Length: 101
Image 1 (cartoon, rainbow, N blue to C red):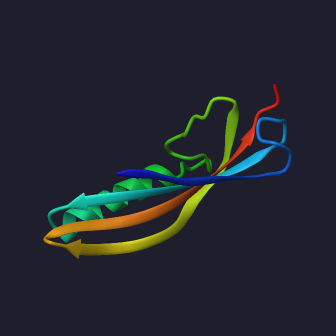
Image 2 (image 1 turned 120 degrees about the horizontal axis):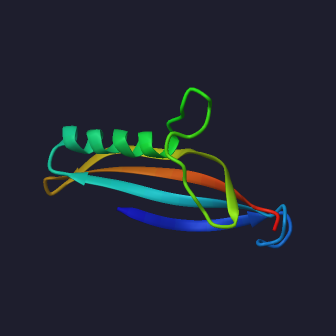
């Protein structure tokens, strides 16, 4: 499950050249066993932050009118269980800048 947790901006008003934004996302994996949820969390982590040999991200995130400057893990809460349902919470930051038109 993907939850947007907010956007903060810096620099000139967002949409102007050189404006930046910091997007916080929470991804929660849910499964019936701890092994399954850890496997899913590993897949999410790989999708979000793994890189190729040349340093570029393995899976690009395309945002029209913006360039992704960086993305990183903000927080991992690890495995939790409630009523037999396992979950793994991960928070990621994506930093964007607008492209000059």
